[in-house]
Length: 102
Image (cartoon, rainbow, N blue to C red):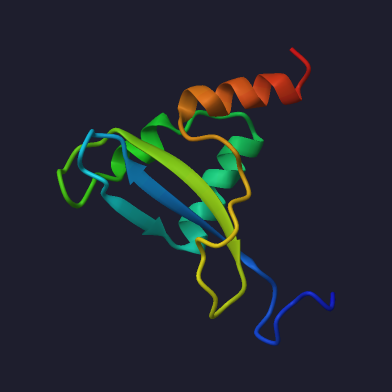
């Protein structure tokens, strides 16, 4: 077990979905099971449009959202350390194409 692991176990992947409607500022935290499912789709190069579209903003009920992934040890705040640099589906696709050398 790496020394960096907390006594509670390895870090978990979390996701935060932020509303893109101007002036709303609504956010929703996704728990590790859902965040890992989103990350697996990204690793396989699949679209997140359907999955992100399922999550409505709790303030304005709109579906337009950006997603940020974070790592956190159990018991720590999951928004301290972002691990994926894109803000929306277009940036994710561009980042994915650039990482593949296309």
